[in-house]
Image 1: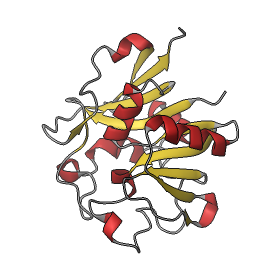
Image 2: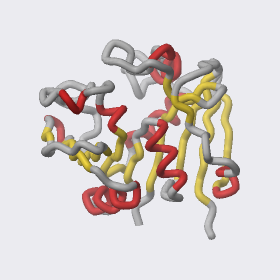
Image 3: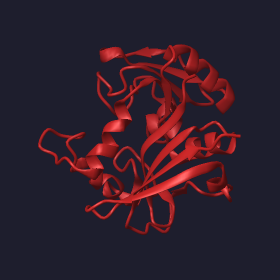
Length: 210
């Protein structure tokens, strides 16, 4: 059976996955790109990047997926639903190359892009969205792409089989936190940590049986 996986999801030391306020000019608010600098230095991101621990983890983001689910705030800045011309942050060939399901209370018709990505806009619960995505994935895994609210909702629903988090050594103080309401979530998973020379710590959560 296909698994539900999260990869390359970066957090500050105080648990924020984005800063505030989010806008078209500042998609991650006052965090800027600091949460993702570790990834920009990898070969996964650029042919001029470096191999190593960070790259080995980052590469798993693209392996074995047949569909993605993301939240409305990952697809676009606040208010994108009011712009019928908005087609996402990624240009005409997004990097997903699979059916991609955007959770929003204001659905619109599917948006077919170059390279195999089609955005589908769903007003659905995590359970309903996962059922649709699994059918489209054809036996491959489903990636939960974020943001923090969507990741939290899927964790609360008990739907995440494997999660790769990257703890970045910065303190944001405000924004959107992942961990609120998830007390003792670690009891459901085997947790492993790997410290990288870049200063980030990779945490993997693999669901335990039973």
